Length: 169
Image 1: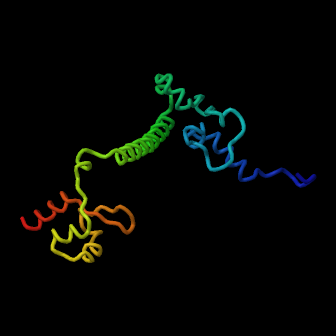
Image 2: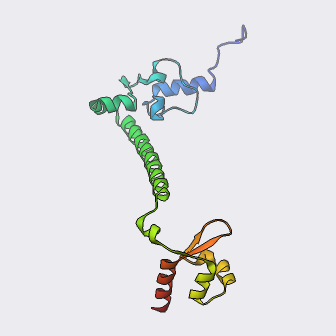
């Protein structure tokens, strides 16, 4: 502050901090709840989960899991924020579990896949009565195609038979 410059005007950050402490507490709170404001956290107990406007300590999710009765004393804004965070976390965890199950399922061959015979392009072209070149050009659109690598194709015999039945049927 410059000496003799008159009364000091509060900065926009100070105004923002004072507005947060005088509000209802829905914009600032425990970092575990995702209730942090866009500006820097105000120093003091509020940054650690204390809401002075309501006189409520905002518990972490771990604390609520240990003692669910504490949720009854929380303001509705905090309950809503916690519920939204839990739903987002649940969706993330469900996606991770689904991914793990799919990877595990791909790793172990099923009984149907073990008995499946794969035909070479020459064998499949003879059954379909088309040229081998036609099979390679249309492999992406044929439901019985199995790619062994970028250039190596095989064709499921059972899938090819089902395909022919639907075309004839």
